[in-house]
Length: 360
Image 1 (cartoon, rainbow, N blue to C red):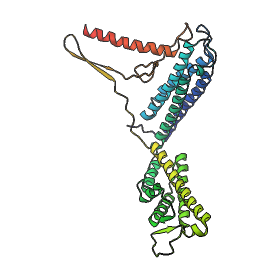
Image 2: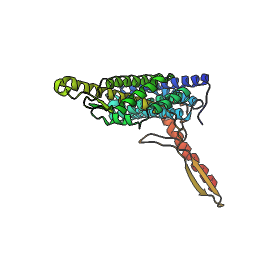
Image 3: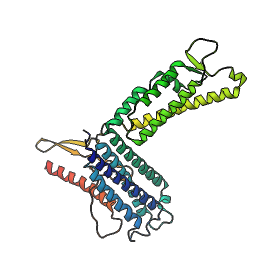
Image 4: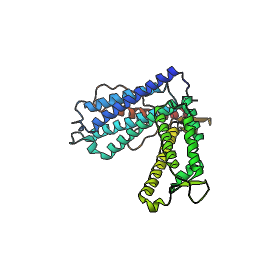
């Protein structure tokens, strides 16, 4: 069940989301500065400022993530978790480069260009994903925008015959009457709907579609019924212009084509935006692993392990966010990355000890 908030609560949650996004963007800048910094002079040196700044930022972001988990929907929480993990992985990659190359010349990004490009892209993508998730949750909570999306879908269904004709991109030297009528009807339906989008981005795209339909309707009205027929089934760019005024003939065709493309482009942008901001089912966490064993007295025992995943040289621990641990003294590189690994090992060791005790 999605969370249901009052207007005041929705504003408070949105403020927390903005704060989390700003913290992530600040960390993104700190990571960028760290990538172009040289590696640590030696493993016995003081903690590099760039490392300390990034580590502190990661811990702050984790704390904000835990706060978000109490406030917002699973969709936003999942996107926030992915953003946190992308930033933590980038910090871990930088940390590893410091350990591997103390005293090396150049910059961290020069030591491993692939890691640099990968993590920069992952963080960018995760920030964009979190922003979309928050926007989608905000729009799905408001009835007016959702209702207007429905009305637009009824006014211009994707399978409308006149839309199919425009999508076929046939030369517009002849315009079927039913195509012109479809454009006029859609234009009138959108203009008759006086309830605007509350989301400014959707409102702007909607107005762009209305304007594009206006231009296409004007261009269609500038075509003429055929001279040698009484039928009203189509209008056309007078074919005699091709002989008497070819410049006007081909310029008119180009203008019609541009107006058609503007409608198709505006329609695509609006439909994609509405689709990305429609309410979606909340993502379900991946299933954990289950082990079925039999104790010494043949009684069944089931052990459930939470889901955890790691890629390449990264570490993973069971749970949404690794637990924090203060470290004092010792080398500078005993950071949260190191303690995350220790926590993961301790978790596995605890499970093994518990299992041994059960089967004795």
